[in-house]
Length: 344
Image 1: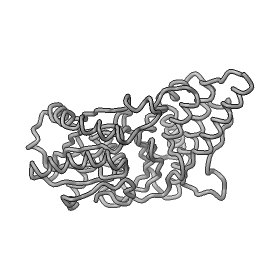
Image 2: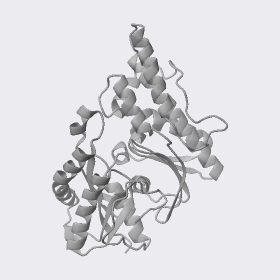
Image 3: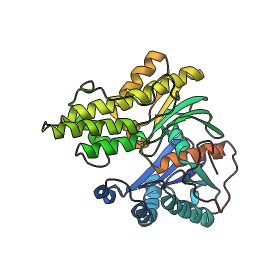
């Protein structure tokens, strides 16, 4: 089957995503979010997210089918995020995908959320060069991956050992009195600030540190202490400068390690994905450093960087095309599914 029509379900966190992809062509990408319900808690509440998925699932599927101009019976395969993610949220998506697969008599593919973030780039820029390097940066993950074969083999080179970059953005935004989620408001505030105003630390960049792992907990703490010191002294907090300096520290570490990994592995293509990949400074610095190193940078549009059903459908399409066996009907959720497991 050269151009399979795949229906994808994504419910790993707080967004209900349903997408339809034919081959490498995006037909629809319907999304429902419960972010507003989590905002007052300053973070995602798993029980609220699960309930929101349950309520949004069927209307979101109907919207995706209508936008694509297809019927459910036209679908050739169904893909769903099996992990990593919030267990309750994953279970809602898996239950829905199993129901549609059973009712339609279609094969089911339980896929890895992180691998799907890599696959979504093919919807915008065509077939991925193999091997490629992938830097995935989101609220729950900061990962550096070597991708020899997207359908069969993904290797983890580095990961966050504490707070992921997205978590650090959220926590720093709270310190600065900015809204949740913290990524967009920090990015906006930083435009008026000086990225070199404050020399915040770059975690895990010493000669004895793991070359490709990430740590943002110390940076987050350094920002909080700097702000607290200003407040104790009765001095105003320069929010724009703090935001810009913090953002620069994150982008500096992420891009430096990604370029180093490309050089060390002899790979000349880098994919930047995940929700934090929508950050303007991260994208600009990645472009600058990749151009200087002779590395081709591929970055999906900001909408495709965040969690969505299209990315799951895109990976499902690759699996069908590669002849990978479907998942068992009783496939379960795995909140800590390792990246090496592309499909379960």
